[in-house]
Image (cartoon, rainbow, N blue to C red; front, side):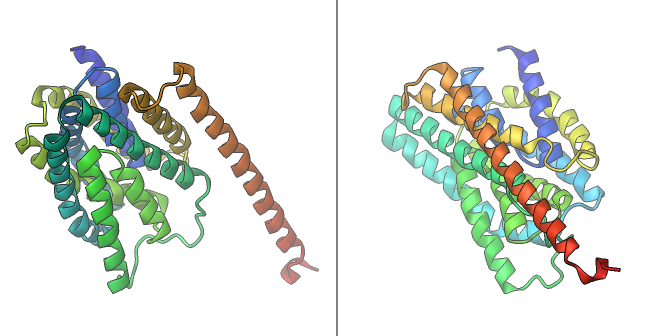
Length: 309
């Protein structure tokens, strides 16, 4: 095992988690499978174990700096914790039912699907979601908000328990679309909730024999300082500076896993070409959208009676 490389992976992913709240499971699992050759179930369990510690450090830092909406985080956990336990149990049942190469192929395909969904969610969040109407917290957190948080939590928790991917990005999208939180509160609440969820999921995977403690420990050597630094940088970095790139990386990782599983047979360059094409298309679409928005704002300002003398 190339331990310096493992530590470097931990440092890089830890930085991303601290700055954006996403990328922990979505990036580390494919790295363990594709680069280090780790068995899929072990990669998922080990990923969850290191991520639980990493996001606890990040969550604590964000909580200390006041960027966590504790009410939303706890209601999300009400749904996500049982959802994650259900996902781990389904994974165990599928492993017994399929076994061997069939199970590995199925699991790689499943993780690839989760990466595609997560990558698209990250791109949508970074490029297309309006920041209008954002708020630091919800003053009147009523039954509707509680039900929405629990439902989102169940779905995301189940996906996490099954694949280790998606908890950060999918929860972040919900925090923006449903609860309309400001960017820094999205990151803080996302990381804090993920820490609660990941401990439960990782313990369940540990008792299922899916965690390589030595591997997780070496990842943590890099990820703990990474998430510490990233959590501080989150308050200084430009909004959405890294998310589009991260979304493209997730799409490429999903395509690489499909090729490894044998589900899709395409040249290696396609793994880079398709996400790059998506990036270019998204860039020009967002640029066109921004230009139309600026023109509309200028038109309104021109016709505003308050601007006339």
